[in-house]
Amino acid sequence: MLWRRIDRKRDRECYILDYECHKPTDDRKLDTECSGQVIRRNKNLGLNEYKFLLRAIVSSGIGEQTYGPRIIFNGQEENPTLQDLISEMEEFFHDSIGKLLARSGIAPKEIDVLVVNVSMQSVVPSLPAMIINHYKLREDVKVFNLTGMGCSASLISVNIVQNIFKTYKNAYALVVTSESLSPNWYAGSDRSMILANCLFRSGGCAMLLTNKRALKHRAMLKLKCLVRTHHGAIDESYDCCHQREDDQGRSGFHLDKSLPKVATRALVDNLREITPKILPVRELLRFMVVSFIRKYWSHRSTKGAGSSPKPAINFKTGVDHFCIHTGGKAVIDGIGVSLDLTEHDLEPARMTLHRFGNTSASSLWYVLGYMEAKRRLKKGDRVLMISFGAGFKCNSCLWEVLRDLGDAGNAWTDCIDSYPPNSLTNPFLEKYGWINNEDDPSTFAFPSPS
Image (cartoon, rainbow, N blue to C red; front, side):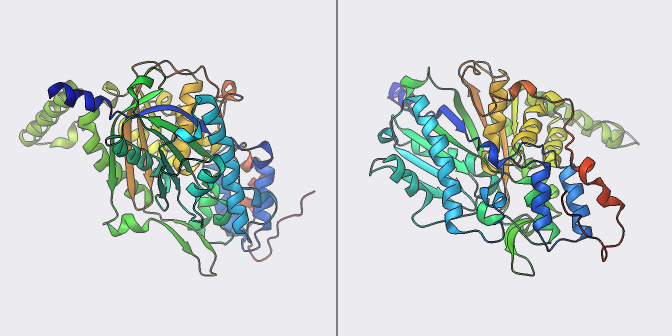
């Protein structure tokens, strides 16, 4: 009985066999010139909005080679159609899933579970149905379609697969994560909603997971633990990220000023739960002893606890690499301060933000792809993923690297040698800095392009 229990547990492991990050075609790159044309087309913007956009873009950490939806290159961002959404998703599905299945040697008929998360759009037939129809999956495939989960949705999808693997033996799961920007590009003047245009970019990732112990030698990563934190019961957390309409009825994604505080609160609660699961006992004991000594002396000292530094947990005692959601430069900086990380630890997230922007739930896998392309991931290493999402949610998980990674190509292959660049400064300020010298909004007019 004891052996059977141990044996069953081995069949419940969750392995990543392979993953494929989507790299759109070069004609969808949003460089400075193209971004300026999109902004000029928006007749609802004035001088003050231009100045705000300039500050936001310059400080965003986003570079010249991110990708946008095709509708903004066709000048149709104010009038998106249903076909724009379908075409955007089909381009991603056919590219990433096709490459993933071909490289892994897994036939579509072998897929037992399909989980798709695209937060800000739902169509009929569903997006999973599009995949099933195109790749001709089996009629008994288990299908899960997630919407509205925000940037933390990919770890929620992994958690669903993890739980399914506890019941079904020798199964394959296909997880597809992306975001649809075509119908969600904001064309108004509300600053809290314009900000999303500066950060979100096109991307996606397809992952192949299994619990087959016979394939452990082929697997890249093994899931050690996963923790989900949801603060939806707190009104401030619930309201900080919202899809809504502005005063003129234009829909967009609202980002509130309270977002940094809300994210910090969710991160603290999430780390409080996952820390005992991922760090060695000696580090937990050290932290407890140091905290007790500091508290003891604070009562005896007339200066109080403020005279000594607050004790901090050293996450590097149990984690080798940090996959941080590329929600923006401020998000990366904030997590770096909270976890006492070095620039080397933050480099994958910063470079991903610069090269691909915030690709929503799929951004974690671009960060992982950077580490792989740089050959940082060695057998036995432990990778901590941290993501945030509307609601408000903070999800995290720990992976164990099962073999040295870096031999296979990925979305970073053609540009990894140029990263990190000498400077992450984008040319927006150099090209459009003259806007800050303008003073009169009533007489301001954007000059016609030469």
